[in-house]
Length: 173
Image (cartoon, rainbow, N blue to C red):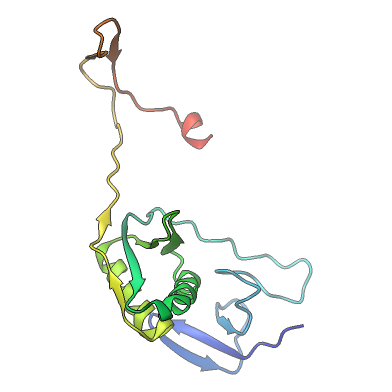
């Protein structure tokens, strides 16, 4: 059994410590972070309704690489990225196969805030940050009005292509 260190109410960037929280309210518990990743329901009743995990319509599209200014701070960076991931449900932190540490956010301002939080609150040191890269994605909203022709390098194969939307059943699969 793990003790809860503090009960707090989070209001944006500010945290207010409270003694108790009435039923039906959402709060944050300090000291259970190793048991819960981002969110969860803690209760004493077996038949209680759990809070569903929030689904976001925005995905992290702006990303940048970060590295510590000195190699000694690498463990701080890794731990700071773990804390950042726990604190913000919209941020995505991961390490590429090349060993590059990536932070992805939903926009440039969100990325800027995440980097500031990483350096000031979660690490305590400065990091080198690469230029932000935006993942470019396109979609097809209606059937194309023309047929495109593509020929192979040896001119023996021809591809005729028309773009069209995919059905809802395929998109959900």
